[in-house]
Length: 141
Image (tube, rainbow, N blue to C red; front, side):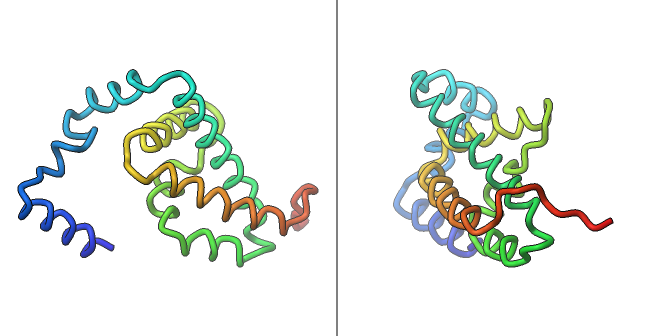
């Protein structure tokens, strides 16, 4: 994957394209804040809703990981595991969780293709969730 990213960046450079100048990260925190400010209410709400739903689904699936080892295997096999789940997909209650959702929302709005990838990952998680019982998780005593 890293080799692919390097190759794409090299091709862009040879074509005279400054990849960093195209990124919302080019202006650092100002670029990230501008991304949020420029989103209309509908787009921003959709991004927050998608990120919050995905985090909740991930949490529900992870609760079943011990009894269903195939679930973490399927989740970890997808590129979104590294791009999202490990980098803020797990959103605990409180301020830390709010920060995780906020960062996911910025990714959703700012990174080309990321929203589509999250929707695809959500569909994967929904499919997995449909295969687990909806009752409380059994704990060993």
